[in-house]
Image (cartoon, rainbow, N blue to C red):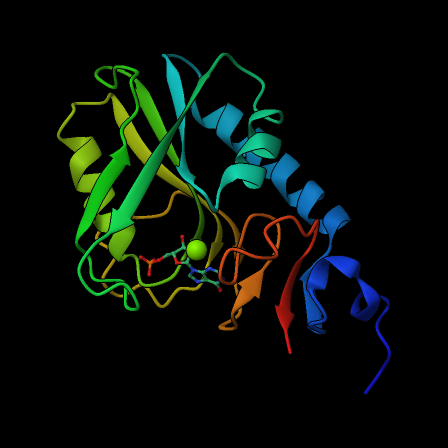
Length: 185
Ligand code: IMP
Ligand code: MG
């Protein structure tokens, strides 16, 4: 096995990286492109960028700084209840944005789309509040979301079917602070 500099990364709690899937410069370049795409897509109107916590917190903070137009930021905290090992599709809002959504362009920012169940329920809830438009921006998309009823308008990367950590993504709440995205051994 090749020796990888990141194997010695003190942030990894002794775990080893199988491979770095996206390094920090690649992510920065892609986030800049996404920001430009989003800027062009919203020529007018009020834009509210809604980050889905916790996974989107790093992506969202980088992304909004690449969007070159007025906007507001708020967050959503969703919780699946019922069976908590499998995404059950029963989603409730633990924190609900205090900002009015009606008449605004809403951009829901998610770290990764896997089964799409979380997004289905959230999008149904948000649509009921009569936004002017409602779109999803996901840093990563596994394209296995056969159940997802909604298009993901803005996608950072078509992700490999591996379990990824870093840049907001966790494994049991660890590794969110890695500046790169990796799969672990
Ligand atoms: P979904 O409802 O199955 O689409 O669940 C998506 C959520 O599962 C994401 O917001 C992540 O929190 C988590 N998730 C899915 N795939 C991964 C992964 O590869 N790494 C870390 N978290 C993941
Ligand atoms: Mg998670």
